[in-house]
Image (cartoon, rainbow, N blue to C red; front, top):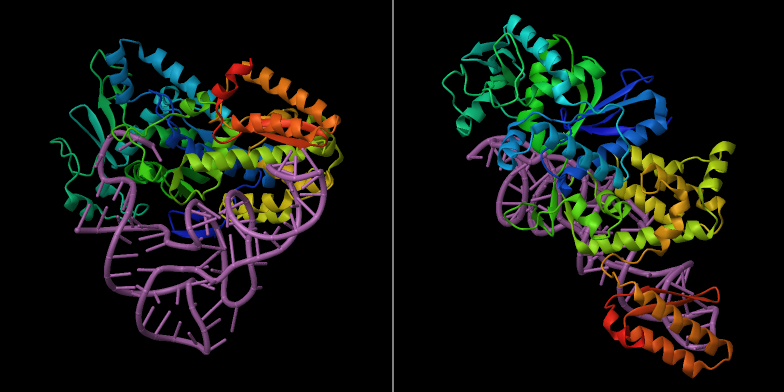
Length: 479
RNA sequence: GGCGAGUUGGCGGAGUGGUUACGCAGCGGAUUGCAAAUCCGUGUACAGGAGUUCGAUUCUCCUACUCGCCUCCA
């Protein structure tokens, strides 16, 4: 069995992964707060941990991996959005959650085993909070319930900071009802106009961190294998999750391995609304950039390093994917053929590919291996490439390879009439070529080249694609 | 200020205590009516300094720079 090694944020080391129960490998990843379209940064952890999910399924079997990714549907940002738009909270969270799942599916991500919503687990949160009060790890003050940081000796261990350091930083919210400035809220009172649930401390709503503790506990148990998320969540969110869960279940480890993906940059800068380089996944999809292309760009950088989204990478990913799709398509790959391969047991990962990927999710290394495998000249020799593309979530519909191979670069969209004009000119050229009238054939090609159309004579048949500098207006007079 | 990550050839981006990453671009060749596409071949890279070592891009320390978190933001 291929050995998986993962970088554990908790120990800051790359460790051999040994599941608690190989029959049920368990992973939890922090999902979105649903109040707006998912931006590109939101997509990174989803793709990273989807690849891990797929790898675990490959190695332990699809039926032996449980993946939980929550949806936070109770939060002050949602409340603010409701107030500002006049729409109901339920409407906003339902719509945004649907968008999120659609956008993530478009990027080739599998649906997790469970996608729990925070509001479905309030009872479990309350129970956990009650337990923490009873064991002295939490206290009630002015309708709030706070976690007492002092009661958990290992507080700060994950993010490598001490309580003293953090207080010295003086960036913590000092509320009069806190015993210690670092104590954080698990439950807070809700006025009538905000969502609230009845609790032993009056009508209120949960703080941010408790939901993940409660849902992970309910769906995965006190101890599970992997907990993932963006590294911006390491503090305070994950630190607080650990504190709550481990104090609620003395003796438990909570998650064995913590994994954090690095952040996304856009053209070298952090994506932010104020810099104007902020865009959503949907924005890119609507610009005609296929989901697999976006996914390939993400996979081309290791998850532990900051990833720079640039248009140059987008173009390179498009070209790579088109080439891979073309070579597989030419060698007969389609849904039927892949199904036959699977049925005959010949659908296996390339050992080197899998080994590289299993070494802390080295997706760039795995892609490099696919480049080598893509040099195969026969259908069987290309099986490793095909399997790898499916394992990475880059191809799901093998009957769509032809489309993927023939897709025009997304920065070279053209009006519908162009196709007719180009096809007509190519037919004229084909006639000239058949008559060995090279002067006329070249004249027609020059005409198309002048408009930026690239003409290729593949297998005696002319194909075309809008190239760099494509300009439809040059062809306008020939309609 | 505290904590952490990083600095690899023209660009992107892995990895390794001594031997080819890989991709793009470039260059040479094959192929082609000519091209394009494709295929084959081709790169004196590892921020700077000191140290450990037979040997360091790879380990240790220092310096410089970049970036992230610590604050609503993944």
